[in-house]
Image (cartoon, rainbow, N blue to C red; front, side):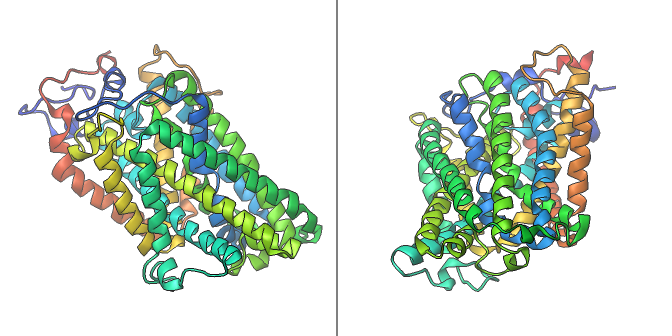
Length: 491
C-alpha cells in the first residue's frame, strides 16, 4: 500500500486517492524558499517591517469601513463583537505563529496544509486564501473611495460623482477610486519588498495617530446613556456582528506570507504575528467604544456613520473630520498594499508547486519581485473593486478566512503529532486545547454568516475543485518521478 506521504511518480499505478493526499515534505518547502522562475525573492525584512506589514494589512478595515455595518447588528455590544472576533483570531494566530516559525515560507496556511494534510486540502486552503486576500483588497478599496470623497469635499469642496465613485448596485457605474488605489499599490509592490515595506511603515504610523486623535476628540462627546441598553439585539446580534467584523482581523497572517523575504523568519514571524494582533485588537475596541459613546447606535445605519462624520458631530467643525478622512485615505491604502502583497506571495508559492500557471512564480532579477504576478492580481482586484458592492465582499472574505484559519488549527495539531522532533521557535500554549478552541470558534462564526454567503462560498469552492482536477492535479510538481517521500510520513 502506498504511503500517503509518498507522492506517486508520473505514470505509476498509484490510485487517485493517494495522489490527492500526497504531502510535500517540510524540508523541501523550506529548501525551496525564495526560489522562483528566473530569480529569487530577497530576504530584506526584519521584525519591525514584518509587524508593520501585519498591522498595515489589518488595522483600518474594521474601523474605517465595516464598523457602520456591524453596529446596527449588535448595538453598543459591538465592542463585545470585536473582542469575540479578536479571540477567534487569537487562537488561530497562536497556531499561525507556531507554524510560521517552523515552516517559514511564502505560502502561509496553504503551505502548512500541504505539509500536513495533503495536496487536495492544501489546494482548497489556497483557493480560500485567494478569496480571502483578493476579495478583501477589492472590499477595502471600495471603502477608500468613500473616504477620498470626504477628503475632497472638505478640502476643495468637490466630490467624484456617484457614477464614478460607487460600484453597480450602490448607485454607481464604475468605482474609479477603488481601481486607482489598487493600481497605486501595484506600483509600490513592483519596486520590491523593501521599498513597499518602507512606504507601508509610514502609512501605518499615520493611521495609528489618526485613530488616537479620533479617540481623544470623541471622548468629548461621549454620553454614557448610549450604553443604557448594551445588548438590544441579543447574543445572536453580537455573534452576527462578530462574524462580519472578523473581516477586520484577516491581515494579521500577512506576515506569514513574507516568510521567504524575512531576514530571520523563524524568530521574527511568530513575534510579528502576535504583536500586531494585540495592538490591533486594543485599538479596535477602544475606537468602537468611543464611537458608540459619541453617537447612538441606531444612527449608524445612515450614510454619515463614519468616524469622520462622528468627529464632525462632536466638534461642530469640518476641519477635524477632514483631517481624519485624510488619515483614513492613507490608512486604507496601506491595507490594500499589504493584503495585495500577501495575495501575490501565496500565488507565488502555489505556482512554484505547479498548481497554478508558472507566470505567477516569475521573479524579476533586479527587484526580486514577482512582477507578472503582481500586475495580474492587481488588475483583477481593481476591476473587482470597481464592480461589486462592499457588504457582499466583506462577508465572502470572512468565510474564506475562517475556513483557512480552521485548517491552520488542524495543521498545527497534525504536525505536532507527525513531526514532534522539529525545532519550533514558538509553541502554542495549553496544546491542544487552544487549537481546538480556535477551530471551534472558526466553525461557530462561519455558522453565523448568511445563507447567500454560504452559496457564494460553495460556488467558489466548486470552481476551484474543477480547476484543480483539470489543471493542478496533473501539473503538480509532486507528480514528478524524481520527487522523494516525506521521511516523517514513513515512520
